[in-house]
Image 1 (tube, rainbow over the protein chains, first blue to last red):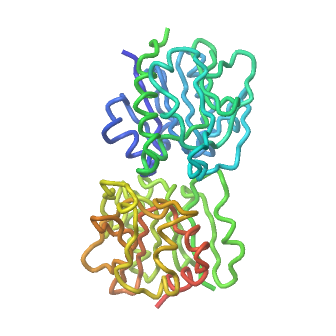
Image 2 (spheres, each protein chain N blue to C red; image 1 turned 120 degrees about the vertical axis):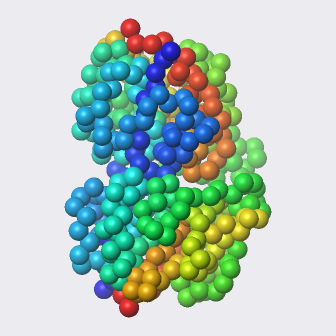
Image 3 (tube, rainbow over the protein chains, first blue to last red; image 1 turned 90 degrees about the vertical axis):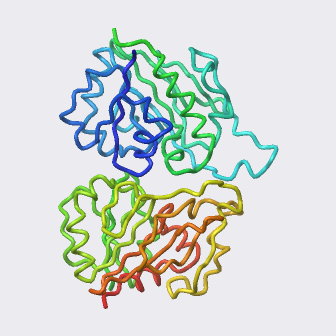
Length: 201
Length: 193
């Protein structure tokens, strides 16, 4: 069984998303971010960095994350964790978030699954559509999983014996804040997808 | 000059509106730096604060209020870090009625600000509050939300004169700025007795 651990930033939205129903049972462990420097990541298949975990706290851990992926682990960087600031090989461009686009009934945020991998079996377009914070410019080896108006907002990439999954979507923050129901549906698909990924080699 | 300490826990800077204040100074300090509150009249706990860390500082925060300071709590309480705080209770049905704010009494902190302007942000309800951090009996409840009338904003004064204002939603600074009362609010709440 694939094991999933998350770093917990101690915020109220991390508490609700990681440590309370309906999603707490997906997480085999939560590691308080201030305990992370001494934590053993290697016992887990996946390390999940929830939305808005403070990038300033992640930066000193970057080499640990690189080693984790090198050893076969999967690192998941959710929106607003800004891996482009602390992980080599990630290029992201922020956008000014439009929180009100849906007030126009004919509007469409333009979010599409690319069809790559198993993700479309777990998520549909509606479960990925609330608002945008930015997009990635892909490098060789990075495979787009979700796009918005043609720009990548979620990708995966083999790294060492493991892999990197990164998105600019921030469902943990909004689900944890009781705001925007699509974000709860996103986690209902995303977390089972992660748990169905293969265990580390 | 009323001096506030802002517990900073995001990679983005604190609200730019602070730099325009003339009678109030807000000093942003990374949350995990030394908890030295000397020289401050108040402490702002933003919604992005690490509440697990704050619960470890609870005796210092409690003493700060007992010494006459003010604490402005934002967000949903998940890890109570003051004796008056309990865990957040969400509105069950988050439709328009469920997200509509009610002013339970007129209070000088919100004088001149119609409650409707707080409910809606560009026509959309829900930004201000989607539930309440339960208020203790001695608190004055100013705003509630939804059919359950859960307490979104409440304030209390301890016998020592220390004040606690609890806003059960996104950090209140942006709403106060839009209402044009940010400086007045921080002056009123932060001024020591």
